[in-house]
Image (cartoon, rainbow, N blue to C red; front, side, top):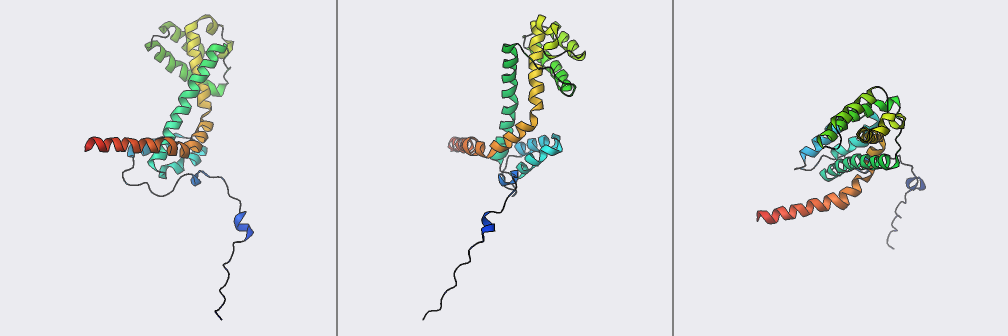
Length: 209
């Protein structure tokens, strides 16, 4: 009689029900990047990561060892989450006639944005230099949002304030934007960046032959 073979050992129930903590490392490989990786994109991510507050680096640091497609995807998504809310909020403030009254913590970003957008919109010819200076003076004196009679009287000042308020709110949403960009990075790399890179590679190979 042939000797009986031992049955394979089945894993215990605890193997299937072991709880795991959420971590961004499950999305990104910690192995070194492949040869020929895009050094420019990796360098941009490193500089961006160094500027982030410590509590946000836990989400972005694992990306430093991820494939280049993931790094590119994150950078694209981060830019999109900065530009799209900026113009969306500006449209809301402009067409609704309402703007938030910014707190003292947000005032620094608001005042900075008033100066930046005032100069930019003056160069574009959207507002006069007098309106840009009036907006700068008003923000320096603590006037902002819908509490300013100056904003309702001068359209150019109102335009600058609307862009500045949209910028301040978008900047305040940075933690949410970072988390959303990291979460969507693998999907965006798989659906858009990867196929686009392969297509561009085939085009370049055809041109070189």
